[in-house]
Figure 1 (cartoon, rainbow, N blue to C red):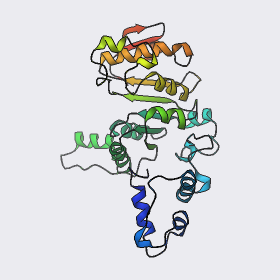
Figure 2: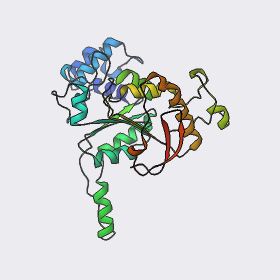
Figure 3: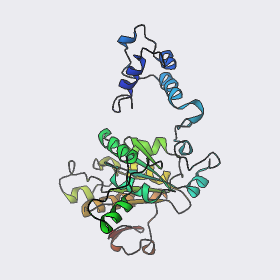
Figure 4: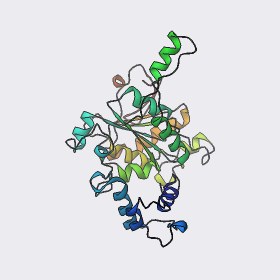
Length: 296
């Protein structure tokens, strides 16, 4: 936030305001001359706390004392009464998409399911900004499509207010799941077309023969990320990790990685009857199935 998303430059401009409307900021970042404001490149923990309280207020913090995100302070549909993870996910489920890209998929899902909440996690700051823009300046995709089919080409798309059930996060997904998500609090984690580790492994046989964490290729869905995802999901049998890819070799790699960590008891296979019209291609171990088809 401080560098990639322009918070440092915005703060500098506010501190340079000659009308003295931001006294609290001057207490956090004291400066003798307002026309020459110098801000640190790295914020100390104390400065971060002061700055966060200035922006959000002490009673509206989105991070609890354990470092986990308090989603009831992020989404309006989760009120103070839904403090437990079970009640929160029952009343208004929280879904996460890791590797969200430019946000097309998650913005559409948030619009189609306004009573549910979505978190878009993406490493690249430019893509996070694109997702944020789409959620802030969104249109009704369904009405736009219907208007195109039933009206002339001059029909305009009706604009709506911002999508309030989407939270945009710029972060590496593994550390985000481990450090910022309370265990057992997430309904679904989606991964749509992740990037295969082609830059590390030249052929399929080498990648598929990797048996230990040290030998794993460098990619997003390594064993540590899968374990972190499993911890975040609801433990009542309703939590789901849904991975969609059009790369068969990569699908096999992820499936075999899951088999290796099934011993921990934190990942379970999905039975055939729970995946609708998808066709089962292969089975790995005793509980990991690979399916083919169009996900609903």
